[in-house]
Length: 427
Image (cartoon, rainbow, N blue to C red; front, top):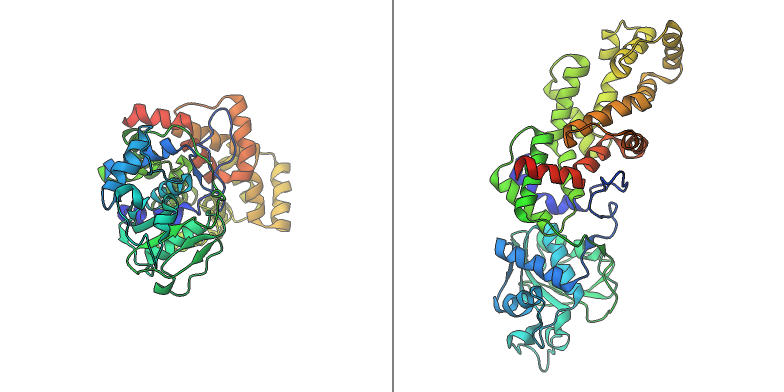
């Protein structure tokens, strides 16, 4: 997948990525929620406005007319308030969450009276933009796609909002589309040239969690992204890559989402597949094998790390190591534990191969404290440039059984220590 296509998939991927919940030795990532859980966003209106100002300067947030931004967003970011221009905190949170999820957005209406407009404020319409002006939004685009109440961008936006807005939230343009069922959003008719959302019928808060208070700069975030490209993909990040991914972090997206995007990318998975063939089977991977294993990973049938255990348990590996159960067991001692076993050890495991199969036996070796400790130590060296202390090693070994190696990688590369190190490497 090209970098541009990968970036375009951001909105679809964001809600699906796993989040490391453990906090070990100060290496915890920024607060986030598990897949499918509430998104994280600030509850401070000034911080929210500052995020929107940062996005506006980068060209990712637009209001038409620009007076909306000038009177309703920019002053708030400076801690100022213009009378009659206040925005509901939920509106600000929705704008920031939409920005995080889609990368960019534009709106055509926020607090209509604030900019001196009385469009549809009287009979017979009595628009919510006039009656409850701080509680309504008119979206015109997300992720660079215009909205008309019926297109794919509209459906993606409304489904995204429906995952965290309270019941009795309203969305217009029901007459423009069909086949969209929403759990928390009531739909009504409106003109088919934008997407309206409002909170006039509910005072309930959004289903969100509190985000970290201080967001990194785009430059610092770009250095972090450059480190991820080097450590996961063994290549430099382009200027566009650093800027695009860096903006997501600067706008409040958790580092775990970005690190998970690398862990689950096709490019990284193919690198792991090729390495497993070379290191375990002693040969280059064939095209058919690459396609087969990548397909299983993308379908969720196996994890990225399962490729190694599956190749150790394969007929090809078995044949390369005497083609006997005892010889197979001896090879696992040598390659995974880096030591020799006794004849009794080999006989013991050979019997278990006959009873439970090679895959089961490989899993016992792979999940042993010896092998996990080695993998964790190698990750520390690669990602943090140091060896783990005894307490850290023990903690991550225990976590590995629950998170898997991919979870450990994501946890280490979304940590504060990794972020700080990336600034010295690529800042």
